[in-house]
Image (cartoon, rainbow, N blue to C red; front, side, top):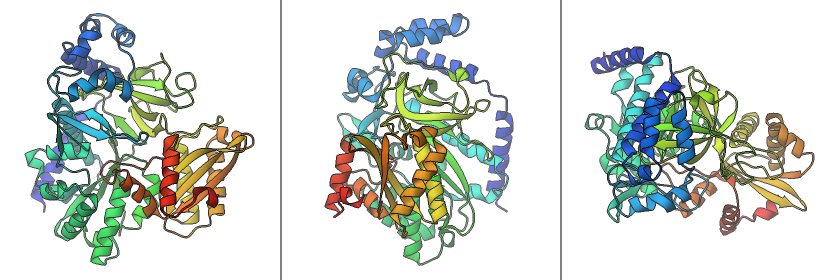
Length: 522
């Protein structure tokens, strides 16, 4: 019997019994807010926006006076604005800009909507907060009663960016997963794979080769990463060892912890690589912080982390608060955690221990359980299509592709959509990445039909201004080659689900270099 595993599981179970108390979201968020404001009140940012007055209101005034002051005093920031006005000083080495002390780590992230990289500050406080939430997620596994004690002694493969960070102008920069892996606690190093040496590798293709070579020597129970890259790695390992499934190499693989994109479009192809079912756990770990995770087996979504370094605000994602390009208006409506409604879509604002203040992270979410503060990610503020009022979200797109691929029995590895002009009206051009044979016309009609069922606005506009839908089927490798050309292969990088503005011409230009003429395949 796995003695250590039994002790760990028993300890985890006892911890969760203590933690299973009724949530008081407003109380937790107010406490988090006070800690944030109190810690940052003497920074340059805190002094500029009267954090001390806001803190006093939180301590001594009744109700939500503190939040009213926060709304009035502190503007809403997107990345470009907060970088231009504040974060550039931290990158130059200034102390006490938006958070106490000097920031020595910056996560490079382009998300999925921008071409240029962003430099997101990662303070010591944020590193500790992410580690704390990661441990909580591990503790939550005791609620999955079917997982055996032996699992807690198995290795955990974390497929992320290089831990060999770039040193530039008195700070380190790299992928957040690389920053975190470089600072994993000593007690976890025994379980961590691929280990320090391989984790440093900056060449993504070489890293996958090295992991593949070592794979048969590891006893992996958990795999953590972005679905597309984990699937690619498992296929590589299966081919290398000439076996049927990944369980022939890792018989004790029981848990896949995924995030970054919706897993559903990948599920069918992923499960072809398994000998038996495994447990899937979704996480919401962004470069700006660990925002939410699936906390129990029956969860409809992920539970927001309300008491660990992040204060949340929510902007209703509608035409009153955002323009047609997904840009927030000057003074949008903002809500606290107790004011949200289930089923409505919101854009996230976060204030964090990394010195992000009223920061528009760019994601949209929907509450599936207000009681448990559980959410699902529905897309990006700028990753939706509404050329003529169709209001097509990434959530709609994921579901349509999932349903169509299931019906046609194909494995769709990647996809993206571009809104284009069609005579005097509009059209959508889908690019579908699959290595399975499929008739483009059949696939087009099926995706179109599914979207009409999922989205009433889309169904209306397909009869009016949205004149047509085009589908181009491409080898899945085409998408990975484009990401490689952009320097975004591996790690936390994801292919954008919606192409807009310069990205459309960039993508079409790339396809021409691959001998594909986008206009001719409609």
